[in-house]
Length: 93
Image 1 (cartoon, rainbow, N blue to C red):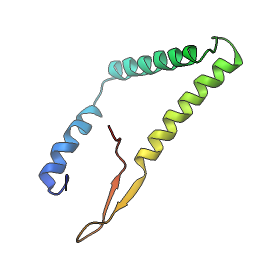
Image 2: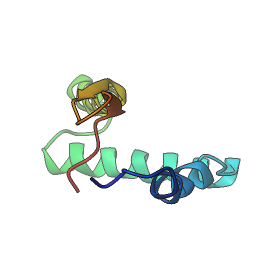
Image 3: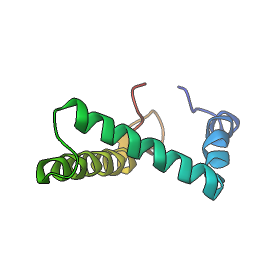
Image 4: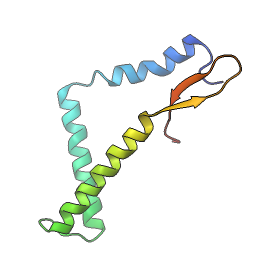
C-alpha cells in the first residue's frame, strides 16, 4: 500500500504542509489565475461580460469548484487488513 508506514505518510504529507504556508501574495496570484480562467471559460462558452448569463456562468463555475473541494475533503472508509483506515478522496491526476 502507498501509505503503509508513518515515514511514507510524512513524505507524502510534507508538500501539503508546506503549501499551507503560502503567503498572501501567492494566494492572491492563485485567486487571480482562477479569476482569469473563469473569465476565459465563460467567454469561450459565448457569454458576454456584463450580462446576467455571464454572471450565472461565473457563479456556476465557482459553485462547481467549491463542490469539488467539498467532495474531495469527505472522509472515505478504506477497509484494510487489520484496522480500518479513514482517508480522503484524492484527485485521479
